Length: 433
Image (tube, rainbow, N blue to C red):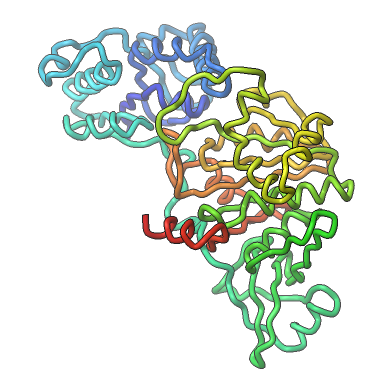
């Protein structure tokens, strides 16, 4: 059934292609949405870029007709209309403040709802508060679901499956590094799925399923970096993926203190020592927890210092002082790349580490992943239970979506680290607080 869709600014700033992603419907953009786009067009990063793209797209539609009357989107049965009036009677009727942009959007929805008897009116917004206000006023409101993962599609926290194989296959894994394995149709596995193999006699092995075979999880040796070893099987899985030349994208999820950052950093440093990589590129979404402290002084390195503190802490723990870290920064072996300025860059022979990836949208992570060049690897790390960015949650953040979209890709792997290794207190707090 064709609908009137009142699209909020938050949707357009989240996904620039959303404006033409509603086939067989009539999209209504209140004039206040254009004002909000104009206020955001100068912002750095994807927000400003998306605002400018939508403005240019609307400008191209002007050549096809009057936007205030509605213009049909090319190659689609969708129309876009700019609604230029604000029905103030609906604002005052419900005691809303006319100066608030969300309330003017609600007023437009109420007017269309009063006039349209055949078409349903739906407000599409990523703003939770706007959706709640719409519901309170009897207006149907929905999130923007294009990048939303169905709850049954992916379980980010699923443990490594245990599979039963013969003693001979276990022996073959240890002898030659792998064995053929026919999947059970009732228990399918994704590419690069890490598993625990066991036999009836009690033999076991850690393996990685890929293209019809179980490959042995290789032991990782950090001889050049000190006496460091994985503390559980999930860290073994992660180190195998980080060290595999066949896996270009590694996604690590896990609770606070599970070792995501530490083992990734150690694997990256090992890659520099063994000449697999020329540099380590570190970036992250700059999203504060709690109140923002405002602008930070200094150059890019100084501005990014608070956000890079978790990595610095791991350097301090591994090497006991910061001279090694400072030396690598000065020589360009470590490159701090703010997410806002990453577009247009290319990272060859690099390991790109994205910390707190759950706070990035899928469009931001796509920008990062498409920067990766030859002989490089990208590592996305995060805890999908700790999303601090407005408008996204556990099922719509970029990290969860990348894991879901890439789960059957030969060059990608995902490992969840459920065990905290930082301290007993940190692990207990992650579970009970």
